[in-house]
Image (cartoon, rainbow, N blue to C red; front, side):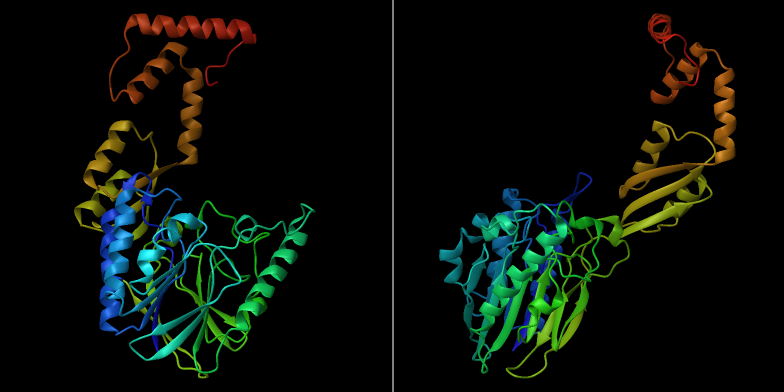
Length: 396
């Protein structure tokens, strides 16, 4: 049996207001192509289909169209669980229709396991499917004491009991899988898992999942990584796109698992090519160096986090020009040389308050000059503030 493991699509997510819809469409089309080229028998989607509990309609349409194409009109089995970003009810809403196409949608943790016939290989797949198991979704209060260690211990014990219970349904002549969306102790997280509680009280020890499965398919962490669960191989497949600059230059992939009942699973990554890379630039030589990189076509199709070392202030006009020159610039972080800034502060302290205001106004308006009425109004307000505070320094 050949399985494809993916997770953390986060459909509907943007990057600082920049739409990722086109990238998400492209990468899901690539995953469909991989499933077909690799002759995958079943697909495991381990949670966070959407980026919010109320995703845009275009994201829901993309999910349903992807499910339709992945399922090959019911000939390929698919199982999807909800993640912490998903609404369990929204994920399960299409279940009656989805089941007719071989798609199992699981919104909330339960005692139920899922036995799925896999037509292509004439075998059974038994899945312990545990969507994001928060206390609210488990419908339990795991500790009356608001202490992290007590909650963590109670949480781990509760999940361990659930996985042991599910393991009773495993069959020797079937492929047995655990699939969940949670944080395993030892996993390496990224900034883009926001806004969730990574680690802390909602942490599960690897031993709690070591209950005799053939493979453990995880979602939640965006960095692809293997974890050990005794003799059972397990893996976070990671997100198909980079969703924060903490994932800059991080390769993305899906996981292919070849497994047979009673035999060790063979795991391999297939790297994804779709989507813009997220990169970080550090321009030590200032604006001139940045423009040289842009003219040379460096990372022309990337999202860029720019740190730029400067001697003088970076004005609005400079920022606008940079963004026009490279549409992928997301963050621009100016770093000022300390010696220059110390001198600048000294000079400002020696200037009349009116001159400081005029310089500030020109910087904020890209060169415009304040009229006399505006200057007078500012000086009047400054005088009133000085009288109320008992004195005012020019650099305040």
